[in-house]
Image 1: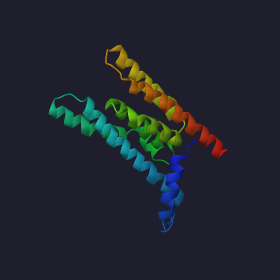
Image 2: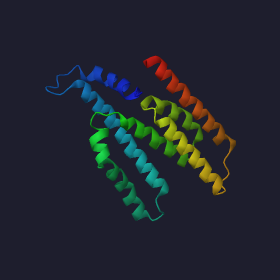
Image 3: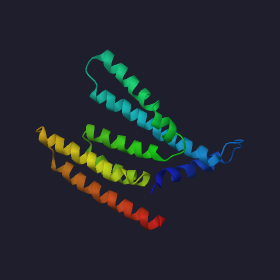
Image 4: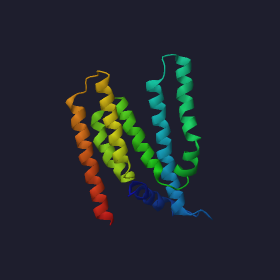
Length: 173
């Protein structure tokens, strides 16, 4: 179930519907505004991810940080699905935010991101959990010590995602 984007769009619709937009559909305009916000937030996260993994050469780093969000924003999928009234921009935002939290070793942010991502689209839960598990496993293989907090956070994310998905199914159906 995709609950988050339409819920946010209904708040935008209250503001948008006060004005005359001519031939524009206020509902689609509200969805466009919410999806544009999520898409721009993804671009900002892509900048942070690029800055975190870019080389230490300042010229190349600046070029990569500027070019990465441009490449993302000009891709076919973003222009033709995320900004065309579909609801997948919120899913992309939460998956990118999960990746950024993993990269910055902020394990405590992951359960709320998984729970809110489940409201955006139910596929955030399995994809996010797979990403978290692979990140943890890759760290173990490379010999990076992973604290018990990471394992507890992984378990809490499973529980949070399952609870939100069950509540969505119960309340929506």
